[in-house]
Every structure is written in C-alpha cells, then in structure tokens.
Image 1 (cartoon, helix red, strand yellow):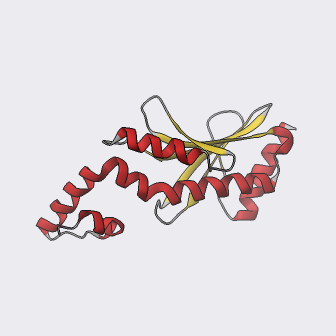
Image 2: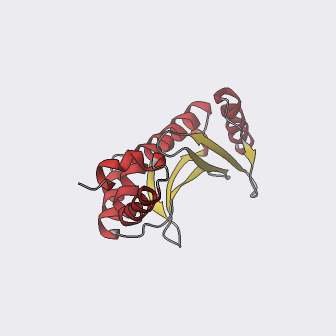
Length: 163
C-alpha cells in the first residue's frame, strides 16, 4: 500500500506538470507549487506505513501583533478542508494535512495540494499585514526616500502610503 501511495505522488506530479523531488527521509517527496501572492509554496509529502502527510512552509514567525495573528489562523483552521495552520518550534507558520494511506490516490493528492496552495496563497498578504506591518512600513519609507522601486509592496500600498 505504501508503494502505491508513493507511485500516486509521482503520477500526480507527472500529470500536474510539477517536478517531484525525492526528499531526504524515506518516503519523502518535495514539490513547489506556483502561486500569485506567495510566489511559490514548498510542500513536503511524506508517505509512511499509515498515511501521507503534507507540510508546507507559509512564512516565518511574525514580528508583531501575535495575538491577532494567531487568532486569525485558529479561526481560519475551522474552514480549511483537511488541513490546518501550525507552528514549528521557532514559531514559523506551516500548513499541515494528512490522508490515511487507504485513501491516497492521484485525486486526493491533487485535492490536498490544491487546498494547501489556496490557503497559503490566499492568506499570505493578510498574514503579512497582520504580523509584519511595521517592518513593511519601514521598508516602504526607505524605498520611497531613496527613489527605489516599491513594486514588491504594491499590494499593501493602501496600508503603507502616507495620507
């Protein structure tokens, strides 16, 4: 059953046109999903004897506004299909999900990775604004003061530009 799940991961990558790289752990595969707000989301897929688990890095630990930041993620968890926001020991933010081994096939892998991409990409700008607004304001002011491009901050212009 484990071998079938690993083959399903490889088949999913081939059918989706996404490179599947063998990871460092037994049964691990790594993929990069392209996004819009978050340009790419790296996902580790780990096939064990019982399940396929997925872990995707979303962003580093927030600089500020921790209570609101974490509350937003906890409230969002109730609406996520088969996955949840989680933190590692450093406080960095991940999305995690799991499919029991008997349910792993190309379609369930596609559903899980689609949900991860939607949640990661769809929440990225809001989480940045909640957890890094002061840093973004400093960066904006520095760039404007020096005549540098503000292109990578344009999505936040309404929050950063002086009145």
